[in-house]
Length: 268
Image 1 (tube, rainbow, N blue to C red):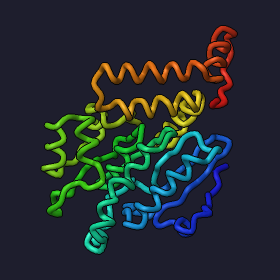
Image 2 (image 1 turned 30 degrees about the vertical axis):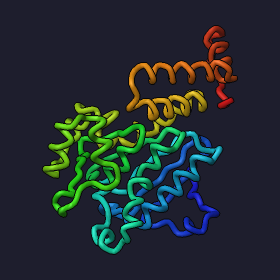
Image 3 (image 1 turned 45 degrees about the vertical axis):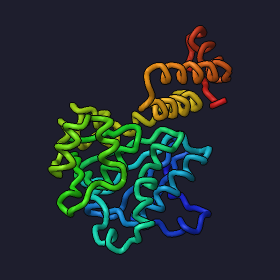
Image 4 (image 1 turned 180 degrees about the horizontal axis):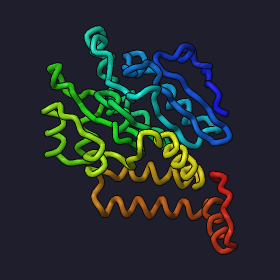
């Protein structure tokens, strides 16, 4: 059964608007947004989320990190008043904090239902997998405030869907429904609203079954080569393949294949 995680870092002594659950048997950690009904993300919460991701990335009990929320909405976005109260120096760190899922070596899943706006969308875009339901709506509504996305949203989105669709979403503060999100490649998988938790559990179990070192290598390689010329990407892929060739997990995978059994990966 999952247990609520406590942290030695005094900056995480009292979590602002979320909690962290650890399920050692499933080798997963859940970051649970818990400020219903809309799970608005405060400025201090952004700092804490970064620290939590960094801590979980070093936790040997955790293979997969899940970001989910309490209630019918993932998050309607950030605390608007907080932007005016924050210093320019603090605001300049927003994108770095929200990019923490992308920097994590471990796979990160976002389980999105209902509103997923502003920083909620940006946090999800920084994750590796996004599971959505028919109720999910994505949006970057900052133009309505006389502002632009400030936590990596427009940049990440443009990589995924191209400049034309990104301009349509950002410059018109347009909401994207679940069907569009799936068709455009924003979402990994779309399920019935009642099946979101089951689908998330299934993806966690699938990811945990693979070699930890191969998973970390694949994520870093794909992130690092996103903007690389094809020749450079192929060269880096070859180096990563060569390094994994020496791993215990690869040896175990080959032996298990020939012996027609399930491999036992150790991440070595």
